[in-house]
Length: 209
Image (cartoon, rainbow, N blue to C red; front, side, top):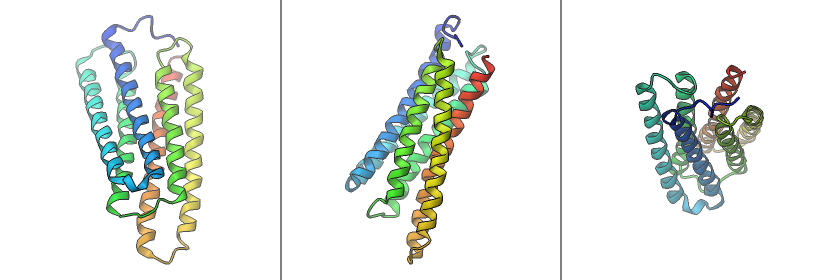
């Protein structure tokens, strides 16, 4: 899959912006993971994630604007727009997690929260690597490797959610059950959106054969 030889400079900007959005998502994932290790600074981490999410919105807007103005794109407009949209979703749900942690006044992070954060960080690292590999002449195998690993991580997150909910139902506090259930499910949705990005990357590689 060698795209570099024929992509015009203005078309390369799509990959530059997508890479920037993936790096932005990775920064948010690292911040989310750090949040659970330093939970007393939740307001600061929440603010930081919100700032990253806003920056992501600006990048996505730039991509959509370029798509609307371009007659020729290095990949289909559907794929480029899909990558931008799903990466934006990844950011949105990380931001939603930080917001829920704050408004629900969760005093101490639980082990499933940390487990989810670890999985999310690894998944977003895979997405960042996969997107960076798209224009590479030898990038096909690297992209596929990243998509396979992202799918594996999403399945692992499903297992964490199942176990976490089963344990949560043993709790005697119904309000705590409701709060933690929503937080766990929001964290798991982040991995679902990561898988959506991976699926688009896999489709891109399949079309390039």
